[in-house]
Image (cartoon, rainbow, N blue to C red; front, side, top):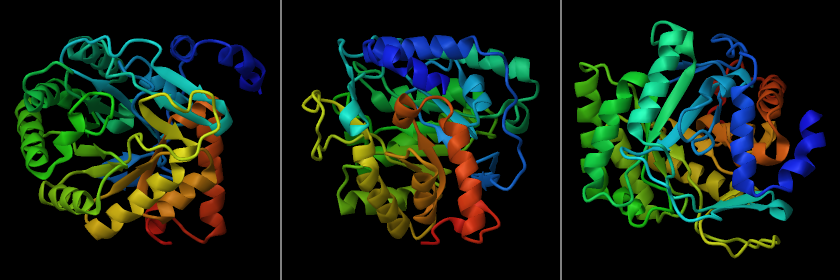
Amino acid sequence: MLFRLIRPALFALEPETAHHLSLRALKFLPAAAHPAPAGSLATEVAGITFPNPLGMAAGFDKDGEVPDALLGLGFGFAEVGSITPLPQAGNPRPRLFRLSDDRAVINRMGFNNGGGSAAAERLAARLRRGGPSTSLMTGVVGINIGANKDSTDRIADYGVMAQIMAPLASYLAVNVSSPNTPGLRALQDEGALSALLDAVRDNADAATAGKAPPIFLKVAPDLEPADIDAISRIAIEKKLGALIVSNTTISRPALKSRDAGETGGLSGAPLKDLAQQRLRDFRKASGGGVPLIGVGGIATAEDAWARIRAGASLVQLYSAMVYEGPGIAKAVTTGLERLMRRDGFASIAAAVGSE
């Protein structure tokens, strides 16, 4: 209710300014309990127990400033980043656009972040505050890693980030699917992807004495069938913890908003059907051989449930919180419990792929 009152004022601000204000507000929230690790919505993926299947997607908390505040809102996990080895300013502003008439967002941020060292220091401090580095003590926090725009060896950048972040992460998310760093999506090609994942695994193992966290791979929705087959095969061969399906799209369905012509990645409601179809495509291509995380256009419990029924073991959102506010996590998880009972499922795992 409070968000509905202040939303007009927030929407009067330039979107990136409003985003920074939301981060500052979360920093000042009183500490809240993380979701309980057991309950009807608890589920296990890649050896990690998630208190519920709803996560905050990467991009909201780029520098790992407020993961605990997000967990306190009711998210079962939070994914911070994307974080690159060196700080980078990203693309020129304006680079973030609300498409209110479409309940969508276009961004061309360009991996703006404060760099790996600063984020690692911040994330290490939260683990020290939380006690032993276990998901049950500190909540499930994934770290999304990327490469610097001007890097001469992007695979090496991912290796560096894996080494820095592996000891601090519940899981590592490898982002090769942002449309806002030129050439990055080429790393989804079969040969490059295999080499990249080997570099991430080797460096993560080296940094953790062979006890590296699971590796998740975030893919684009704008893929051809051959790409989907190849990525699925590699994910199974490399024993990835999960595929995150999907990032923003460079396609443009019919849009009504003033800023519909801006370049960048489109997210929010117009992405829902494409992201749902890509999830089904990856489910079919992988034969269920790798867990899937559904993201893109999820705004309600019904959206999340449809994605789970289509094959997602976990789901994420971000753009919907722009329009619905911070209460969205509890609204979605409460709705998921109701839908699970309605359809006669005893667990989230039992419902995965049941459509």
